[in-house]
Image (tube, rainbow, N blue to C red; front, side):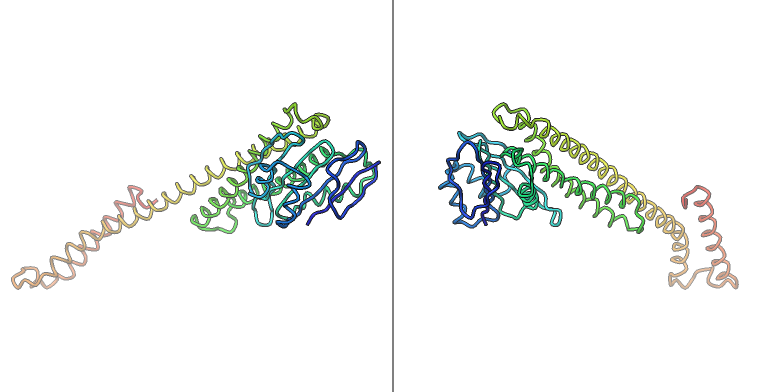
Length: 315
């Protein structure tokens, strides 16, 4: 689907077809390619006449966030995050002096929100292509925060362990969180580098007039990066703690089993001797030999148990 807005003489016009590429000084336009078909993608070649390399970046999705300079426009690759599926979605921008073209293979709620905001705006004169770029980028970055906050809440729940889950279940949850943090890191860090390049570029003339707004987005990305690194360090500490606890519990079990085995070793030795089928054994003809042997085995077992307990092996 393709939709178009043309701003001319502070009036908003919605067109069903693409406007002329050559525009007058008093108008600019916004074309949005929303999940376009192959025929619609061909319009990027003609009549829009964008560079083949930038069109290729649109077709091959999940490019690294970046900024490319071309003769008549600047090309931006931005990555959004889908909160429902926790997956990355690419939004591309062709930004010229009098137009902006957005391209996304999945439906983008951030683009929709800015589109509706522009249509409802009463101050059309304050809008231009760089303003649209800023608002969409700001919406995308703002939508990162709920995902990061959700991960922090999950880490608090894992740390509290109010449901008394086993160590194995907790470790599985920690590794799931680390996987999500890695995805966030691979998205937010390149976006942070991109915004830093935007605010320090001398070739983006329209952006220079809104530098403080893009700097604010960069500050948000810095904060998100710090939150992600802090969460990663926390997951590392929690993972090491649970692994150590699991090893400690295993060692305790092994110690108890070793003590029990050690107690039964002399008892098994005695039982083994009297279990031999020799005819001439003097103890076999003793009237109280059986009871004496049981008492001896009981005294040995209790004595060894008391000795191990005194040494603290059961604590």
